Amino acid sequence: MGLKEKGNLLVNKRVIIQLIVGVAILLWLLQLANIGETLAAIFQINILNVISAALLFIFSSTLVALALYAPLKEANPNASIRQVIMASFGGQLLSDVTPARSGYFLTPIFINRFTGIPVEQGMTGVLATGAINAFLKAAICAVGLVYFISILPLPGTIIDSLLVGIAILLIFGSILLLLMWEKRMSKIIAKLEKIPLIGKSLHKVTEMFTNIQQQGQKIKRSLITVTLLIFMSLIVNSFALYLIFTGLFGLTTLSLLDFFLMASFASALTYIPITIAGLGVQEAGYVILLQLLLGMSLESIDPKLLAFALITRALFTGTDIIGIGPLIKVGIKAENRQKIPENSRFV
Image (tube, rainbow, N blue to C red):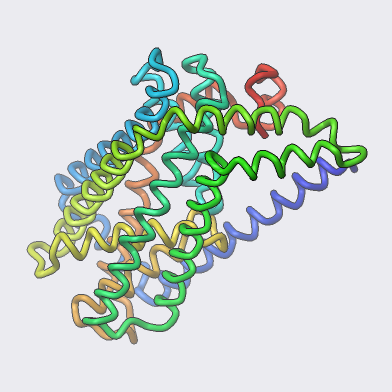
């Protein structure tokens, strides 16, 4: 078995383990909350609220796609907004089902296939969007954590999980910015070509990286737009959460600010790489935080709160199914990668 096959096997095993851990957490939550009562709560939700929340999630994902389009437009004025949006939905769908949402980094391939934009330009847009997304959510989470600690007896496990999520976001965002703009990074990567045996095979990687840094200088003016669009997507997500919650509970004393901070918290938890896109971890975070906000004891789980977390997961991922078209067109299986043009490979 070659090194590539061994690497793929290790990745597959890790993904399976992460999926098992996520499902185990969900089953544990269902056992604590009572499966029957949780399912009953899901079926009793106001359907109009569900439809409205789904539309808001689609709108939020579209705002993220527009945030990606902004830097691409700077680098390539001929970029098609409709095709970039579809490519972004494909990347967002992959991010919903991959550890630490890493699948979004395949978006440049979708962009290349849909629009003909070079992968280097697409990757530059993804790096810029990802970096802003990471820093913005980390900042909101940090403020939210201080706020909730001041008014709630948050368990240490939740605080630690959020701190890990914030740290990952900050590290992740910093790496993305360094890849785009730090010239010393390109020099370090260029030196890898001097490594015996593997140096020559890294030439295309170093060449692509140099091109990414050149493209990175063109998109700086778009970063304010990217920030505003991502911030707006978080606000829209908070409205969606509010509608799901009121569809289950009716009128609530919780404010939109609470749901806005929860939306950021939930996003941070998806980057913790112990499950697939935070599966189970995110749901546990929702339940615990909501129970504390509602003044409920943590000795048991309210079935409606778990229903809220499960519906939110289903709608958030389900609405990104719009991106299934790009996945089918490009192909996500390993054998399909052989069909991607030589100038489109970046992994």
